[in-house]
Length: 287
Image (cartoon, rainbow, N blue to C red):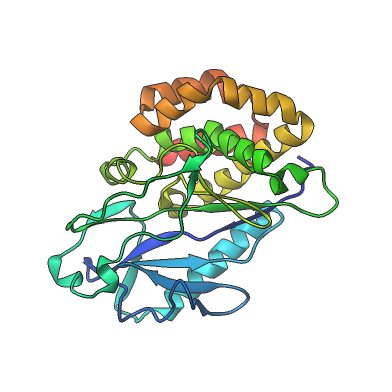
């Protein structure tokens, strides 16, 4: 592929102490308003009881994998030795870990639905021990490329719709755990995104793809294919996503694994690069 773009992420994870879930409050110094910067553009913050980290943007597959690994290693090195990172999509937290005001704060800046073009209604913050984690991916414009659509509203929307058609539906196959199914009831609906000055933040995915380099590699390759298809035939890609919107939303929002497998096999895999197909097949072997 020849398309140039930037790719980054700000995933969320839980913390465990001797196998038991613990709140990040009182352990992680950074906050949404004032993240704690480590080295080389890596930052960390607490997000409710979860821990969120960010990485500087990458412009190639190798750079994406290297920067993710560096961010993860820095994060592990920053934690007290008795704590471990837990990559699950959701969990029920012990009542003892929810006694701080931060652990009961829900809601952040609004996000949007690329299909309805409206603001997503945030879930109601009931008195519950349920918490969840996202694996948000950021895609950005590179000066001198044909991807100016990433800087325009409908271009952003069509990019998210195409990511749903690829990343989102593939995730239904690869991320079919009880924890992910519970998360999807509240978060990670089809088309969930935020606009950024450089492009988009795709917010549908959980943190499942952090589990291995194979999954991380697939996220890059799917993004590469989406951007290449839109650069090559933007109108065709936008039309394809729009015409299939109802089915795409159904598969993601209902967690329709059989429908997702059929969609991948019959619709998008024939349009993927050989590298992406191999990467997807490797990812399927890991589940």
